[in-house]
Image (tube, rainbow, N blue to C red; front, top):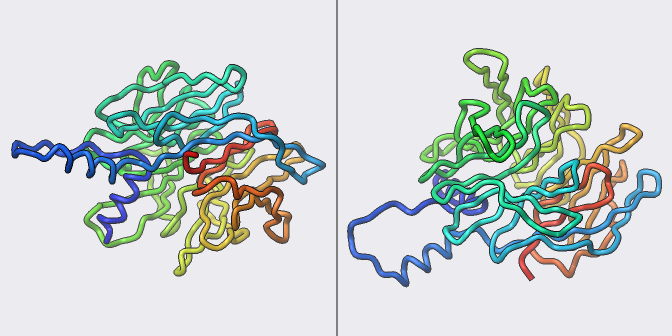
Length: 316
């Protein structure tokens, strides 16, 4: 079961390299298997956001990011870009940057035999961070890299992990730990203290979701944890103390959400429910837009100024 989950996890992020074989192979079979293991075809749909106080509303469509195939995991940058993960012809993924002003995309990593995904801009130490998946693996470490993807290096030794978020001072990193693919144990949320030698690793929870967003001050990370029925609740993990505070439950069957720091130091939360974009009013998830034209909605991201939202859905 654990290995099956690991393979599903891998396929949803980046296709693994196929093992070498000296036996004759059927080309049609290979193509069918590659198609089955490849990440699903998704695009990133951009919409304007407007606010009346702290109440948001969805505006007009503002573009779409996508090559043919898998384009996912958007992350808005402060300089007017969107980082994202895109799968090439080999099924391996690289990091790209979409420029909001020109509408053009630029490839930031180019590793034909390996994959990079979950791109972010870290608070310091580097110009870019991502998960690096080595050839033949199904996940690796959170990596830091300088401008132009120069000097890529692992930010921690614990592996394999699939998602992550650094603290504001880079002293800690919260990670989605996959563990041994042969193990029957659950995936776990681990907190790594990077200031100790060797690094200190503390298990925080079992069955975390794939969403990790740093709070505006960098003191903690918003994430989710699933209950026995597979429904997720947003939690806040304090990086320094390791303490967790349970917050609002996400809509049933949903694990994707995004947090956004507002000018008055409050935090807005968005998710999806029954084909609608919803936000947390403080008491309930309130629909603000009909997204029924999109299918298979997953990831969300909001620009730093709150003027745009990215929504990942199936290719149209």
